Amino acid sequence: MSRAAVPGLPSRYPIGEQLPALYAEDDFAQRFTAGLDTVLAPVFTTLDNLPSYFDPRLAPADFLTWLATWVGSTDDPRRPTALRREAVAGAVELHRWSGTRRGLVEALRLMLGVSADITGDGGAAWSNTAGGALPPAPADEVLVRVWPRHGGAVDGADGADGVNGAHRVDADQVRALVRSLCPVHTVCRVEVLPGPPTSEEGRQ
Image (cartoon, rainbow, N blue to C red; front, side):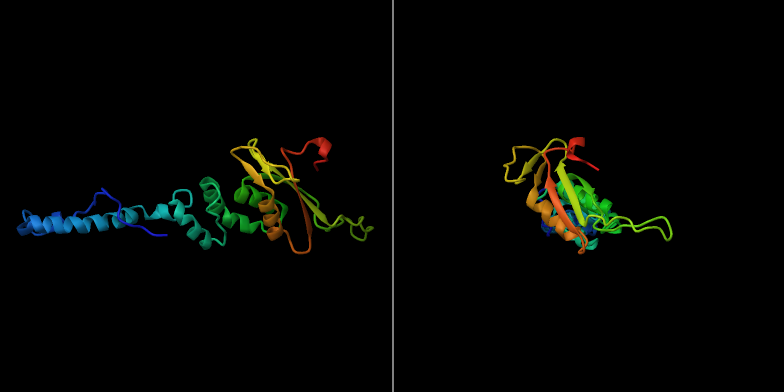
């Protein structure tokens, strides 16, 4: 992350105009300070817009990785910039839902831009009746189904090649993210679908 001189960027505070009147007509002094203006103009512009550098929706793209470290998030410059901005902006709220179904669905949406449906609770069961019979043992598997948003494509799902599309699902990235976010005591299985689950597919 760096900033350098921007060719042709005017300074809002030219040094030559602030010199004593003695140097107003001095060609050397004006040319010398103009060179300094070229160096300082990006600095003034940055300071004038400083709040925008801390807003992930407005900050320059090369600032996003740095901002992500502020909120305990990760940033992949290979992803679309719009997704990267949304992921950094939503990171704090996402931490509040860490380890939950909602948190995983939101993480998949923010980090990879995919829709998701999750069934299973990882083996948790409870009863609302005090002293009642124990409920049946629940399945200890969590099923995570993901599909492209807005009619995109699937890459590497069940060995199939993806087709061209604006929104693609990388099955390996999905599995890696699910593994990193699922609680350690749960078994998470991932299915990558071409579209939203239908009733025939047993969406719960």
